[in-house]
Image 1 (cartoon, helix red, strand yellow):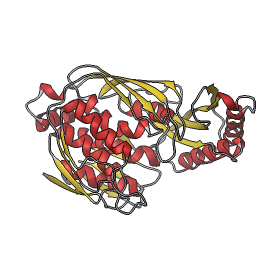
Image 2 (cartoon, rainbow, N blue to C red; image 1 turned 45 degrees about the horizontal axis):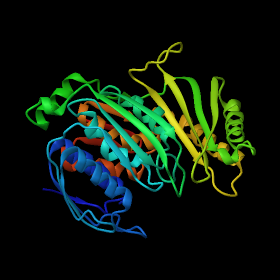
Image 3 (spheres, one colour; image 1 turned 120 degrees about the vertical axis):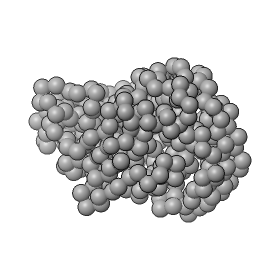
Image 4 (cartoon, one colour; image 1 turned 90 degrees about the vertical axis):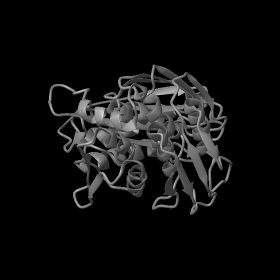
Length: 365
C-alpha cells in the first residue's frame, strides 16, 4: 500500500483527489494520513466523500475511513467498469473539484460514459466551469473526446447547478494486461506536452454570468464591459465576452476569461492548444466593475508572464504529462498546489518530474 502524507506542503484536498484518481487507474491501493490537518476544519469534507462515493460506483472500490472529518483514508480500487453516473452533491460543493478525481479514470474506461453532476459550478477556491471547459479540457482531447455542457449555474451556498460531461475514450485501460503495459502504450502513441512558448496571441474570449435577479442591474454586462475596456487598452486582438443570466437558487455572479494563442498567426492549432485563463467571482457589496477588473488584471499578469501554461492549469495538467512522458511546460508560477501535486503523482509513478524553479519549467521523463 502506498503511504501518503496528507499534510505535505499545501496540504489541501487536492492530494486526496489526485491520489484517488491515480490509484483507480494504476490499481495501487493507498493510505493517507493527516488529511487537511493544518486547516481550520481539518479532515475529509463532504466534497471529498463524494469523490470517494463516485469512484466506488466506477470501480467498486473499498474505502476505510470515508467519514466526515476523518484524518485518514485507505482506498482499495478494483477494475473500472464504465457506466453513466448521476451525482448530486446537494450543496454548492464544487463540480470541477469532484471531476479532478473522476475525470482521469473515466477517460480510460472501456466505453463512452455520461457523467451528470448537480452542485456548484462557480464557487470559491475552485476553477469555474467555464475555465474547466475552455482551458483544461482542450488539453485533454488527445486522450478522449470530451464534451462538457453547462445545463444550469449553481452559486454558493445552495448550488443546484448542473453539468453534463460526455466522455468517449480513445485508449481503454481494460484492453491491456495492466497499467504498466497501458502506460507504455500511451507513451508511444500520444503526443507529449511541449508548451514552452506562448507564440502569437490570437484572441481573448470570456463569459460573464449572473443570476436572473441581477439582470435589471445589468451585472453581467457591467462585468464584461469593465474587463473588455481594460483588456482592449493592452491588446490589439479580437476580444469577445458574452453576457448571460440564469435562474439560480442562490444569487451570484462571475466572469471567466481565456486568451488563445497559436504558433501560426492565421490559424489556431486545436491539437496543440495554448490557452491561459483567469476568473473572478461576485460577492455581496462588490461592484460588478471590480469583478470584471479583477479577472482582466489577472489575465494580463498571466499573459505578461510569457508562459503558455497558467498557474491553475499547471497543477492539473501534471498527471497527464506523467502518463505520456517526455513532456515540458513553462508555467506562469510554480505554486505550492503544483509542488504538492508533483509529490502525490510521484508516489504512484516514481521520481519522474524535474523542476527548474528559476525558469518556471516543469519537465517529465
